Figure (cartoon, rainbow, N blue to C red):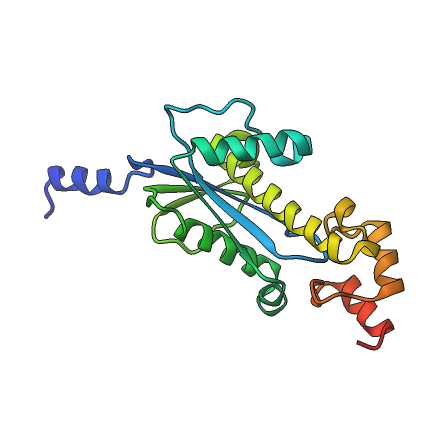
Length: 209
């Protein structure tokens, strides 16, 4: 029979809150019809606080850009990764998002003891992880990750706009706005469009692609 001392030790080892570095993880670009899905992981430095961290969607583009630079300068470490359009079409958007998050965590220079992920799904990781609904508004490290992911992806879509200005990627960032859908119907899909998404598949049929 196990002693009470052993049982207490065993329970302590299974405690959910573990000491050590904590990384926040979030993604940008699950919903758009074009472009990769981007994920970021951030371990903040408690000795270098960053004011104004919030859900990236609630910040202006200018504010996100400023915070992007501050996060990169002050965080203990951060990592940005993506899953390509090809991976999205092959795996589905949920699994591709999990893959991007997994890559972001693996890309951290320092290994966290715990990972906090925005949402209600967790990628497969080799560390303790917790999913937090609305975490990008509740946990600063997740807020920081959401900003890095959003700014990185927006910059990619701005580059895509420079190559294909008729589609308006600088405004809708790949989301299925009326303008984007009209461009799809008129000009057809680009290689950067997600073939597994219904509006793109329909445009491919209409253009005989």
